Length: 160
Image (cartoon, rainbow, N blue to C red; front, side, top):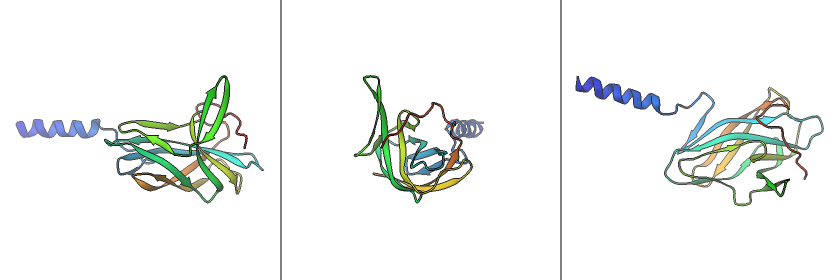
């Protein structure tokens, strides 16, 4: 009976832990979820990318850069409200991913900026990119392009 109880407790513990979805990518202590890009109109030179990074480890990591063939100048950015004015800036030292935390890259906050786009992004397309972390190293991801109106919040203008 003790073996049954111990086995049952182990099963409960395994299923209680957050499982990876079919689209999650795990590397080391990091789990990258739901990478997507917003579609762009013809002639657009910039686009934004979003995803969620969960650090299940005991030490912090940092997203230091990313690369993709569709952008001549990919950068990790932050948007902030300063005195009622939305301002965007690249994160020169990367984005901290604290131990045990989840960081969401989303509209009006941290996001991936794809400048000098080589082609318009069309809903339904998929593009590969490499996220580079200070400790976990490079992580290959595939972004899904979603419709221009997709997302939790409307995008604010990106002036470069």
